Amino acid sequence: CSGSGALAFEALSRGAAKVVMIEPDPIQARFLKENIQLLKADNCQLLTLTAQQALKKLNTPFDVIFLDPPYGLDLWQELAVLADPIIAENAFIYVEADRELSQLQLPSTWQKIKETKAGIVRAGLYQKHA
Image 1 (cartoon, helix red, strand yellow):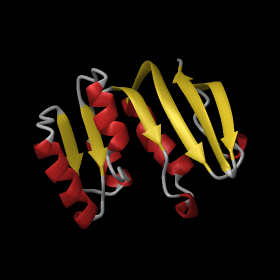
Image 2 (cartoon, helix red, strand yellow):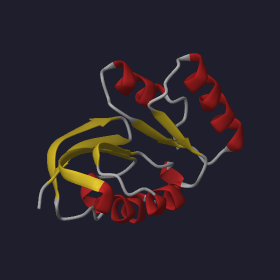
Image 3 (spheres, helix red, strand yellow):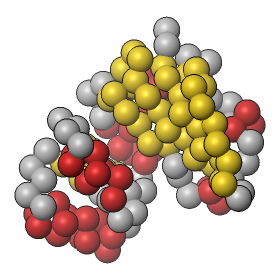
Image 4 (spheres, helix red, strand yellow):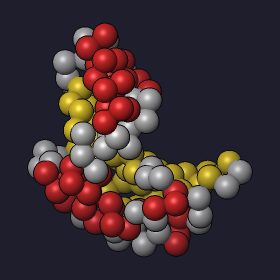
């Protein structure tokens, strides 16, 4: 879920060519759409779908992916498998979880570059290699 969209809008402000936000909640999606229009972010695409639906639909390679699903749903492995085909070679993947990242069973082509911990939150930066 895109939440407030802050990460997407920050990426655009730093020169991202295009951003795709995924937000299944229609109320939150309406808020995001208003902000896209307010900021005139024409290179921002909003998909009002579940992450699973959106990842099956997308086919453009991505250079950066944020994998930060709601912790209680335990979706990391499923979403990683769905996202992997659209992640470009040498792309970066940011993963956030409420458990040790080694427990997530991420694709073997994702090489961990850095891992941090803040409270219960574990964050990892990965890079995809063949």
